[in-house]
Amino acid sequence: MAATTDSLIEYPCDFPIKVMGLNVEGFISAISFVARQFDPSWQETSIETRESKGGKYLGLTLTVRMHNREQLDELYRTLSSHPMVKVVL
Image (cartoon, rainbow, N blue to C red; front, side, top):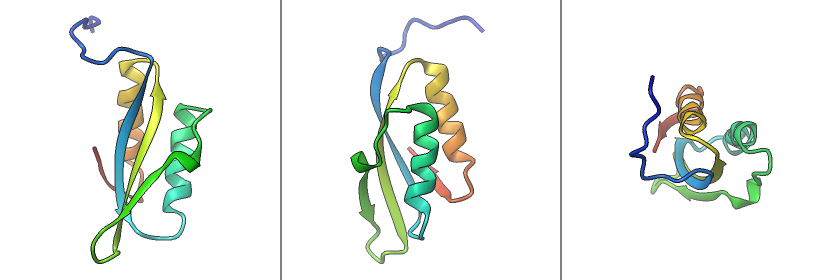
């Protein structure tokens, strides 16, 4: 696969990712564990959280330092396949 040069993203960059799942104990720490696999300097204190109106779901916004498109794609794949995650944006 040839490298594309038409990306609108310049790497490295701080990239915000939204992750949604059930509002259960351990969700934030599980997603934090994944984030640190891709950005060891990432801090859990930087998470923005938002509960759904009924409180059943929790939305997280993580801003993670990405160094290339492949790393970003792999982070999306890893989060999307996590059993606690419903949606990744």
